[in-house]
Image (cartoon, rainbow, N blue to C red; front, side, top):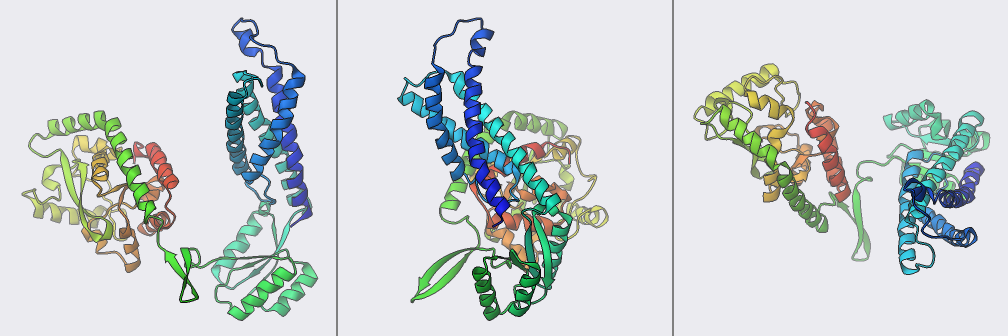
Length: 469
């Protein structure tokens, strides 16, 4: 750990303390503003000395909360915006504790304005002070080399080259490459350490023999060198450890969507779909009327056969945006002609490669269909699929059987969970992504699912859903 990192992390504690006290004093000085603006007399008189005694008791608790939120981590390369968000969260927790304390001990003071003003000013002052310290530390890092970590890269593959290029391109990361070598020979590493110094070793080569790796880790521990490695796909998987007949055993967890994860997601889907059905019901009713007025004989809802979890067939509901004669549906008397026509369009007009297709400027759309498809209104009936249990609010998009048949074997990971109305791919690029990029995003979702991730996807979908494709 660099001395500069220790210094800046240590100085943040008294700086935060002073900013909290300054915020409290500022809030006290402006406490009469609401009464002045309302042309009312002061409702109470609280001595400044008594107020400061309370603040000097309260301020250390804020420092403790900041520490628990990780705001004093000793790293030169912390993201400032992440620190700012943590300051907001930690200060809000402190505010809640103060409100509870005042409720229990009313003789402190009862000015809601002072409490709220103090909270807002504390966030502003603390973030501002940290911003100044952040810029000073970054300036010293870039211009004076103070706090730079001397790093040794080990490996021959493309990962090492990418890391090497990144460090050279972004000096603000706080790294300086002293050497890049292909093997973990200890004799060579000792020589580099003696000549140039090493603060960190980043191993980018997964094929290092175990005996060399063990010696390398011991060398790093003895010489107080940080040891890091770029993991393989297997090493980044979620896993659980256990014991079998006295031997340690590791189970790779394919997704958190198991057990309670599956239950929590289903509850979220039921509650969310019910709320969204109620919320969007006026739009759905108007859309259904418009579709019916344009073509009274054809159905409003288009039932599209797709592949769901475990490869099971599901019927996905959509507002019909194509002329009925061109719909791929068993109830369509012209189904064979519709299939042949679609194959021609895919061959001539599809703008996507891989198993999936996308027909640009599809001539089969109705007048109403052009509008509802452009803004994804056609997908609103899928909330009923979610309520029914065939789909989820978030997850990989459901694909047609003929598309799934073109999957490679590893693509079938997409079929291990319920498909979703929206997903990481939809909020990142909608149908503009190629299939492999879409697959990687959906795989990340499967392996790293959390309720918070579902909430984020749903919130971001609101901004994307009604944007023009």
